[in-house]
Image (cartoon, rainbow, N blue to C red; front, side, top):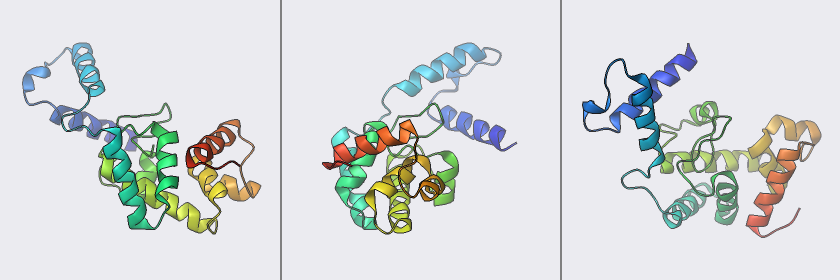
Length: 176
């Protein structure tokens, strides 16, 4: 039921993006979906540039006491600073938050760049706190989850996580 609720909420959000109800005609789901998909791929009115997104990441990092360059490295690795990014697993936005994680963080609108970034930086801060400031472990936990990092007392032996940590640290200007 929760999945249906999320789908219904997403449909309502998509419908609100259109100013005219003419975009939606009963009985023509395929055409409606194609229209929505095309519109969703276009930059939204007021879309943010990479520079604006980077400034938002820096502001959120300073607000939450996280190194802005580390937060920016995470955002770059996660989405390339794209607020429109959606992963195959369902992670959304600049910081690639999973809907459940965003909900736990109190993120009101996972699709809003500021809400997404603020939530992602708060999550990064919690990982840094959990692992006593160990950047490598915090970055690994951002990707694989804190339980996996705790279980292996470091980077879990997952190829994806190993590559992710290396990529983030490269963006951060450090090596593992």
